[in-house]
Image (cartoon, rainbow, N blue to C red; front, side, top):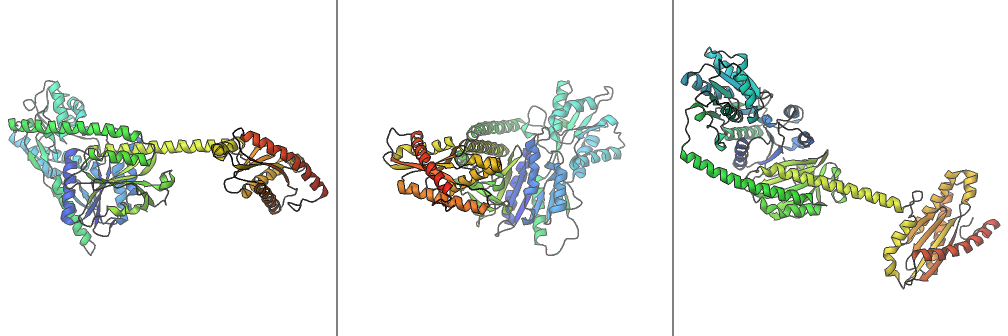
Length: 640
C-alpha cells in the first residue's frame, strides 16, 4: 500500500472519449468513498490518428508504476490505441503483477474481468432491424484495430445474420478507424453495387455511424428513409446535425462498481481464488431517429442547445486559460518561476484541490533536485487550493506520493501523469480534485505544457552550464588549474574599488631553469614542473587570495589586505610546499622558483597591470640572488 491508512488501488487507463471517461471517473470517486480506498489513476494520452515521440514516451508509465506496492489493479486495455501499447499492458500484467487485478471493458482468460456482453447487447439491435423492420441486406462497419469489443460485435452480427438465413457478401463488412472520418470508405464499400444497396448499416460505434450519415447526406441518400444506420455506445446527444442514432447503451458506471467490488473481495480473501470472475453486463437498446423509431421533440433541442452553449462557454474559457498558461509557462527560466506561474493559474482551474509536482533527481540537472535514483523531489505543491510552496524535499518515489498527500479524514482519488519531452523523463504530476469533480479536457494539455516548460528550463540550464564551462576555460590555465592573466584581472577588478586605501600585495613567481628541464628531460618533465609550481601556489594561497599563471613560467599571486610580512609568509609557505611536492613526486630534476613582490596602499590611479609590473621588478632582484644561492648549493627557504 502507498499509505498505511487504507488500501490503494492502481488504475491504468488512457484518455478516450468523454462519455466513457466521465462515467468511469465519477464511478471511481463514488467507489473510493464506498470502499474507503485510495485510488491512483496512471493516466496516459495518445490519439490513434497521430504519432509523435510524446506518444511513444507515454509507455514509460508501465515501468514507473510501483506495482508491488499496490493492493489491487483495475486496467482498461481497450483504451490504449497507440501502437503495441495494449500488448505492453498485458505483458506488464503477465510478468510483474502479483496483486488482484480486474480487466474492464473486455473479457480476460487470465484475470477477473467486467465488460459489456457485446454479443448479447447486439442481439436486440439486430433483431429489431431484421424482425421489426423486416430488413435483409444489412452491412457492418468495424475496426482495423485488434479490438476485442468490436470483434465480438462483428461475431454477433455474423451469427445473427446466419440465424436468420441472411447472406453476408464480401462488401457487407468494412473495417475503419472507429472515427467519423471513415464514412467515405464505408460508402464506397457498401454502395459499390447500385443495383443492390444496403437497407441498413450497423456501425461498431456511434462516431462511425455519424460520419457515415453525413457522407450519405452529401450523396443524396436519406437516413432512415433510404437506409438505416445504427451505432454503439449511445454518445450522440451532443450532435444535432444528423438524426439521433439508434444505439446500444453500455453500463459504464456498472462496470466500475462491479470491478471495484471484485477487487475488494479478492483483497480480503485469505486463500487463493480458484475460478476467475467474468461478468458481462447487458447493454440497453436506445431507439433513435436513424431507424425511424425514435423522435427528438422541442424540449430535447432546447436542452441540447443549452448544454451546447454552456459547453462552448466552458471550452472558450478553457482555451483562453490554456493559451495564457502556455505563455506564462513558456517564459519560465527556473523552477521558482514555474512554481509561481502554476500558483497564479490555480484560480483558472478551481476544481483542483491539490497538485504535487515531483521531479526525478537523477534526470534533472539542477543541484537542488539532486537525489538518489530511487527518489523524487517535491518541487511544487498546492494544498487545499493554497500555495504549498516549494518544499524541495526528496522522498521514496516508489511510494509515488509525498507524505503530506495522505489524508486521515477521507479516501482520495489521484490522477497521475508522467512529464516528458524530447526523450527526457522529468518526473510526474499528481492532481486531486474537489469531491465530485474529475479531470477536464485540459488535464492532458496542462501536463503537456508543464513538460514543455521543464524542457525549456532543462535546455536553458544546459546552455548556462556550457557557457560557464567555456567561461571557466577562457579564464583558467589548463595545465595548472590556476587563473590565467584574463582570469586574474576578472577576479581582482570587481573588488578593486572596495580596496582603495587598503594595503595589497602582488607576488610574481618564476620557475627557474624551465628550458634546461625541457632540454634535459623533455617537455613532459617541464609540464610536470609547471604543474607542481601551480599546485604549490594553490595550496599556499590564504583565504581571499588569487593565484594565476600569466604565461610561460611566470605566475602572479594577489593578496588583498596584506603587508610585507603576509607576502613573505606566503612565499615561505609556497617554497616549503613546492619542496614537499618535488620530494613526493620523486622528480629526477630540481624544481625551484624565484619570487618578488610589491606591497602598497591602493590609490585611484593604480591598476592591476601597474601593480603586476612593480612585482615583476622585484622578481628580477630575487631571481638574481636566488640563482646565486642555487649556484652555492643551498637555499635557506627550501633547504635544497
